[in-house]
Length: 234
Length: 283
Image 1 (cartoon, each protein chain N blue to C red):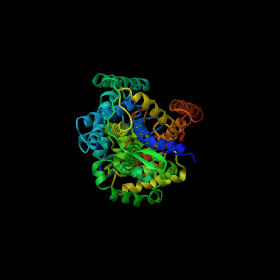
Image 2 (cartoon, rainbow over the protein chains, first blue to last red):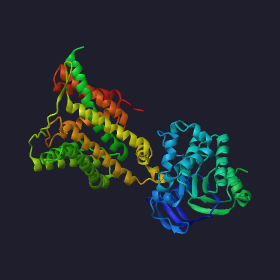
Image 3 (tube, each protein chain N blue to C red):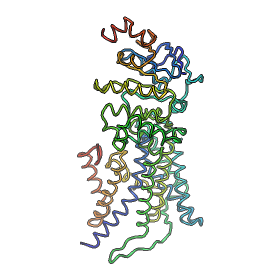
Image 4 (spheres, rainbow over the protein chains, first blue to last red):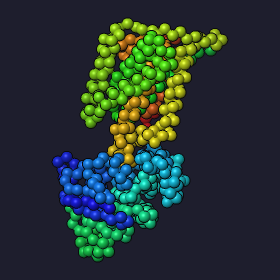
C-alpha cells in the first residue's frame, strides 16, 4: 500500500534520513522504533508532504507521492496524527473534528463519520463543546486521532501517540490503536515505547541515526537481543 | 442628562460600528495571513471612489455599493497575489515596506486619476429627530450595515468549513496541510473577504464624508490603533476597542474639540500600551 524506496530527506543542508526503505501492506499495522533524533518524525513528515524528499521514491496505492503538497496527500487517503497532537487549542472539540473533514469527499459524509468517531471515543462526545486546549492529555490524543479519522483515511500515520502521557493513559492509547486496527485501518506508528508498540503491530523497523537497522515481525524483534538490551532494558 | 452629551454618545456608537467593521477586516487578514495591511484604509478610499463615480455615472446607489464591495474584494485578491504572496516568507519589515509602498501607490494613483479635490457624493439622507436629539440617517444606516456585515462574517466563521479553517490557521499554521487545507486558498479567500469589508466600509463612509486621495491617512492610523488596542488579530478585542475609541473621540469632541479628542484617544492608547502591551483582551 505504502512503499518508501531509498528515501533521503532533511532540513536545509542537514540530512535526517538516509536511504530509508519501508513497506506497509493494506490491513497491516507497522511500527517504526528508535531513539530520540533517529529521524522517525522526519520520516512521517516526508510521507505526509510536510518535508520534501531529497532522493528516492515514495508510492501509495501504486501512485507516486513525492512532490505532492500536504493537502493533496490527505486527499489520497493518508491521515497524520502529528507528534504532540497539535490540536487547535482555542477551537472546540467538535470544530477540531470538523476541520479534519475539510476535504470534499469527507464533507459529504461528515455526519456519519462524526457519529463513528463519537462512537469510538464517547468521551469526546461528552466534551464536544469544550475547547480542545482544556482537555486532558489522553482526551487530546483521542481528539487528535478522531480528527485524523474524519478525513476517512486508508492509512493512518501516528507519531509518538504515547509521548507525554501518564503510564495509565499510555495503556489506554495503545488500546485505542487496537480499536482503530479493528476498524480495518492500516496503521504506521512511530514510537519510543518499544515494549508496548510491539504488542500492537504486526511488523516493525528499527530506525537509528536516519537509517533502517533492523526489520522484522513483532515477535522476532521482541526476541532480538539488541532490541531487548537497548530499548526494553531487559 | 445633558441632551447634547447623549447625542455625542449616540454618534460615537454609530461611528464605532463602521470602525469595528474595518477593524474586523484588518484583524482577519492579520490573523490569517500574518501580515499587517498598512494600506487597508486606502482600499476603503478606493471603495469610496468606486461608489462615487458609479453614482455620478447614473448607477443607483445600491448598485454602485454592490459593485464597490465586489470591486474592492477583487482588489484585495490582487493585493494578496501581487504584493503579499511574494513576500510571505520575507522578514516582517519587508512585508511592512511592501504594504506601505502600496499605500503611497494607491494615494498617488488616486491623485493622478481624480486630483486632490474633496468630492461629495451628494446623496442627502434625512436627519432623524427623536425628541430633541438629532441623528443622521446616513450614520444610522452605516451602523446598521456594519453590524450586518459583522454578523455575516461571524456566521461564516462559525458555520462553514472555510470559516473553521480561518479560525484555526493562526493557532497552528504548519498543521493545516495535514487537515487537507490548502493554505494558499485560505489566504486568497481571506484577502477577498478583507477587501469586501473595506469595500463595504467605503460605501458606508462615502455617505458621511467627502472622498479624497488622502482619506486613508485619517482612518488608517485610527483603525490600526484600534486593532493594536484590541490585540492584533483578536477580532473581539478589536470590536470592543472600536467602540471605546469612537466614544472617546465623540465625547471628547463634545467637551473640547475633535482635534483634542484625537489627542486624548492616542494618549490613552499609549498609556494602555504600557499597561496592556498585548491588547485589552490579551490572553
